[in-house]
Image 1: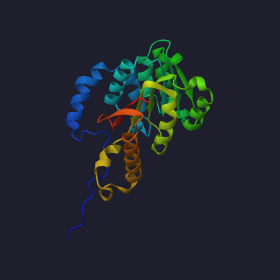
Image 2: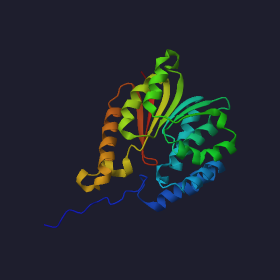
Image 3: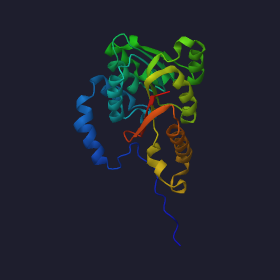
Image 4: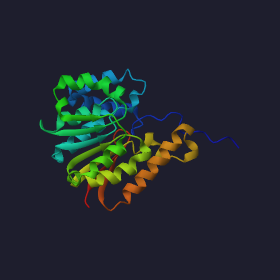
Amino acid sequence: MAEKPTLIIRPNKGVLQSEALYDYIVETSVYPRESKFLKENRDVTASHPWSGMSSNPDAAQLMGILLKLANAKKTIEVGVFTGYSLLLTALTIPNDGKILAIDPDQEAYDLGLPVIKRTGVEHKINFVAEAALPVLDKLLIDPENEGSFDFAFVDADKENYLNYHERLLKLVKLGGVIVYDNTLWFGTVALPEDSVKEGWRHGRKTALEVNKALTSDPRIQLAHVPVGDGNVICIRIQ
């Protein structure tokens, strides 16, 4: 019997497996509306060896709409990288809005910082170059921080997504929004484990666990949206 072929060699980031269809979406609906500063961030990030970690422009466009619908003014971002989604948030929220941005990688943040400074929105950002869990735990020591945030975006180490979730459910207000990125893990969540290249299996397993836990959580209402690498959009209802 012939050996079973491997279905995934190197999965592409993005659920739409037709490159032409994805290009159609971004070229007709995303890039024409993208701020020139966000494009500058993408251009700068292209020089980074892990440039693929940056938020997809189509997912960021959706996040901009969610921020507006939530009337978000005080937000948290867990995982910043070079700051594409952070800059999108800073450009979207009001002038007196605030973002707590947490990421231990100061070097990656510094790569995108000159673009942020040119936009005139740096005053909205409090960047903390530390691991996120201790920062979130420190916030929760002060009861005034509970329920004080309007919106949270998580694009960090996937193993801690559920740990972040427990803390963010205390920090984000009732009716507030939490968005989790990379929940489809390059499309591998829909494939048998033995058809996925070894290096992608751990991320696939983690994404499956996170998606199952979020779906069964009665404290949130959610929608799993196939943009970028998959986003689970949650509204806190308890």
